[in-house]
Length: 516
Picture 1 (spheres, rainbow, N blue to C red):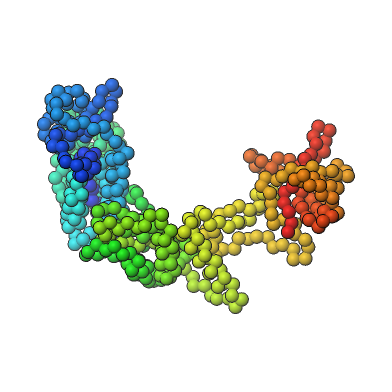
Picture 2: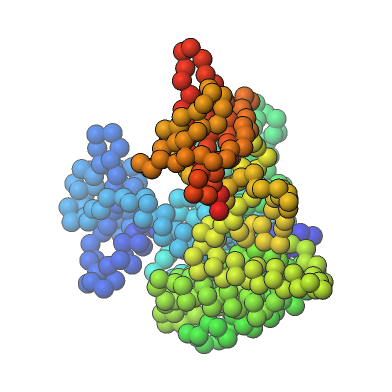
């Protein structure tokens, strides 16, 4: 199990991909013969195309970002030119972040060309921070991604050194010395501020560190002094990981890639069950992550209606999830890491079996809800809950059944002796009928519905329901008078008259439901 403790110094690994867009194009053209000509990516700025990302060969020939394409063509006529595609670069960066999940669950995007990993408490799994960094860079290099990486005590220090320095590993507390010679542009404070600092003779972070912070803040703003403190290692604001940190996780690494997953999931489910039992908790949301050797990560998530830690129940749900996939789980050349994470936990109290067997029924219903939710989606399996309102069509609404599993819905208890006050079936929307009443406010003597005339034998009512005056979006309209009717054939209906009689208004009648 990988854990992160809060009492030890934080350690961060910053990755910078200086040629991310170029590497993306190179990876896409691997199957074709590589063109050895210099390459540059361009985008339109104003009325001219300008270079944004020249490759290493183009830079060696004197090209730089910001140069117009016309000037670049004049210098290097054979230059290859491709338009920038920021969404594609973003997708590649996210795939690289997924790949880095194998090293730590705390990975943050550092747009547009970097990542920051919180490796606190994870380095021992890779025989130290140096070996972790080497392993990560070797795998990225084999994937065709040029990378620079630095480990430091704050994200900003690691990021600045990865971009502007040549330090691989900064010891705890050594950030101020490591960044001393970096240019002030490492603070990302904008070109105008950098030029102003250089004109004042402040060209390195060491120069800034020797100046009074109050004077710097008064001249250049608090953003400069705040960034300086973070780069010097004096302040750590942590990172915001792109994926939520699981409550607990277990994983299995393989010396040789494997293509089977069920046996590994069974072992991980048993390990998770023991871990949750020791904590007195059960899991409500689980995620299985399969890390392929080519860097792709496949994830399967599921949620349960009740906290669970039973490995057999968990495996039953994962098998349902695997069987319901539209595309089978593609192992490629195999998985070298399989991880099972518990994304959400709750307190787990062993249920006591009741003498009437209701506990068994509730457990069976909960298992059925879980299985249906895994196969069709949690939002597709719903149940109704009551709402405190007199408006019939608002008296209940559907919610995912998993959210209410094991909870009482709180329905009002009907009178076991008297007739039902509400029908089982309601029409949505209510259907208009033609009704004839003996007196304006009385029940109908007969009504026509769906071209059929119904003669009324018995009537009960009225039950008056007024609109909810406190709602600003009232859609129930006018006052309603409901009647329970029975025709001469024994069919029972629930109808209402909308509105009250007046000289300017004639009420309308509607069929709202039918009794069984």
